[in-house]
Image (cartoon, rainbow, N blue to C red; front, top):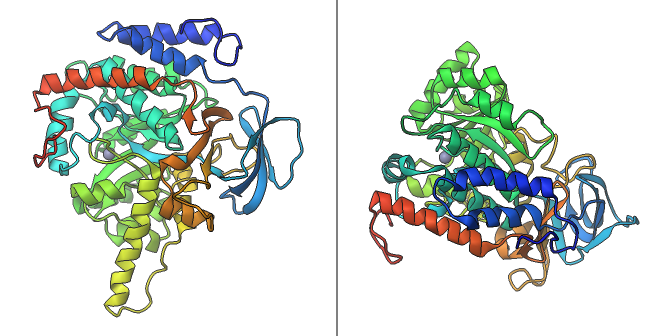
Length: 487
Ligand SMILES: [Zn+2]
């Protein structure tokens, strides 16, 4: 595993290798063992370096770029990090990936995910928001060590890539010390995903939120030409928004319930609602809040399955649409629900239609338009790019943008015979259809398998972390627990 060649026989990039070892060594030094480093090395070094040109040949291509349109059959040519052409019958000297039984589309974008909780998946599926606040935020998170934050980030980001998510906004509220924030960033870097790291609060005497953001910006985000972008996850305080604007980063704020929405609406009189604001949930928002959000260019991130099951309130999907806002979609917390965009898309598609259908059955006229499957895929791609401020880089298959691409198999039992691309994706597919995933032109998943990832090591890392955290909280441990909180 420490050979000087990787699976392609190419020399390992030693600079990268040493960097990974040094950085994760600092995290591992606190308590974790060697396999953490091994996992990171595999991630960092054993992906085939398919630089140069890649040609995705003969797929159904959904660009989500209105000027280019979608194709029944076309090719996508990638050079280095970037898409250089999307059209039928490209001939070029390139490594060819056969896309003839695939749908090729922009990588999915998850616009709000607390990645650090990856080791606590489905530990609280039956829980409500109040249970989550008490147990996960109040009880477990203060026990997190930097290596626990790292383990959660790594397994969440790897899972995202496996599911065709090429960008996620990570709002890990575990900045219990500067080392915790460093560990979160390292987890995202080692996974190789594109991410917005929204620096958010933490717990305990070593927490330095929000002032540590200036150090983070200098240390990790001095250039825009990288996969990670800095943002800030804030509470409902003007002071934190001021800090974010001082350093010039986007502001992601959880807004749950009418009172929270009304507070922000009041701030708009002082010009504080701006295009750099992302409102997460915005449940029970007033029409005026949505109107002001649209007028000021703000974004809304809807986590429909979580909002519905955890009592945040009804996802404000129709209200957003009625006011000209196209929302992005987000998975939020894996302690309660799956973090893949098929779950997200199917939920908002059926929810919006159910609500409109009820109004139709009740005899209401002049109903809002029913969402189409294509629109919902747009929420999970291009709208996610706008919400995360990355739409100039990704979100559509547009020549000049970076090649964040997912290829979905159409020759599997769940979609055969293949009749409609949009319908297949939203209504029938799941993560088993995710065949190939590219991030900035780099192959992260191929033929249904993550490239250079040893799930055994990463799984064990997450398991050790889970054992530590649950050992500290003293929660009962049984995979057959049926209690109300579900743990
Ligand atoms: Zn959240």
